[in-house]
Image (cartoon, rainbow, N blue to C red; front, side, top):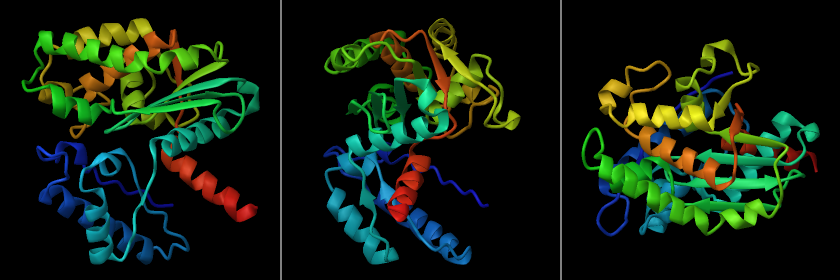
Length: 281
């Protein structure tokens, strides 16, 4: 088994027109080429290449896809926000099983927030909002640490965005299990006392609303470099963990969730599971 990751942070490479700039296109192309070469060296029988929010919402999305394909021979498949929500939900359902009952899943990426809830493997309600940790950091925070006034203004903005979908989720009834997926939630759980990744994927990890509120009061006063010194915070994510925490807290509040269980599976595993299902059908 091999694992390789390359942080891109494309939502931070948008120009004034909302297009991915030349630096971002170059970085994406190089990452796709490196991934394709690695897959070839490892003799992978199938290569699943997909893009999410940053490419999906970019003003020059098609041009970027064409450029990447021309240079690498790989055509990225752009997942819709609904696709992201459904695939991540599938991963959570397969991890916890049917005994979990209704699952409500929250996933915070760099460019978007996905929310889903349901009793089956396909959610009854799913939504995708442009409330990703990287996107909000890039668009809202100009100082390090962020100004208190800007933090409060961003809180209000997130609340307003969530109010457009929260009613649809609340109408589905109480979740048997509320779940958080993605690196952002794993980091927040670690910062509030959950076990480190070295303890393995089967250790139960949770994130509580009171713990999250206390954490926000702490990290909003720190610089990104200081946050990077905290155990469990990677240097490439320390700058966006404040925005991620604000989104997590607001979403839990909007959906009346006091606690989340952290699921080790997320979008990547959902894509793989869906592909496996197709091969068996």
